[in-house]
Length: 171
Image (cartoon, rainbow, N blue to C red; front, side, top):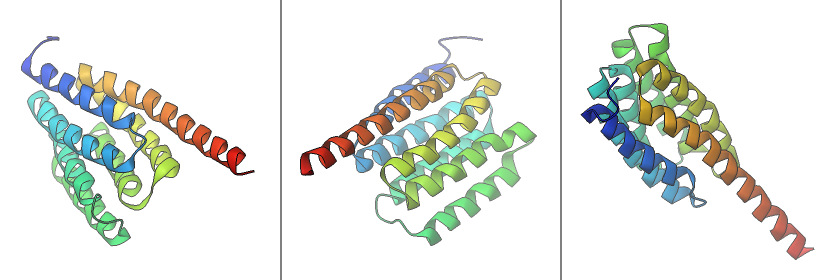
């Protein structure tokens, strides 16, 4: 495995964008940075030859930008349908479905949920992407999903702490 191949370097860029995305307390900033990270991720997976992950990442990137304008469950259903179609076309093995299912969970979270519930569902999708990245040989992607798990859990804790402090101040 080449640590500084073009594919891995693109993965490192996705790693940086994804790390910053999940440190955001503001949902809009999270969606923008996560959208950019997903599109960079798509290039990374294409270079690695994982077309199912590349297509799911592309769908996820578009989804994140659409989610800035709508929280419609119908839009979420349409995006999930596109993602499943992508899986039917590109997933050549059982593990090829990991990013597809992870992206579907992300769609439910990003389009229909907010705040802590959104981040908790994203944690589930992150675990599927982590497995995909390990199997794909994605160094930056594996690091990214580990950091996302940590950063997202930390942000959930920060949001819960802020909520508790606000309730105490109001009391």
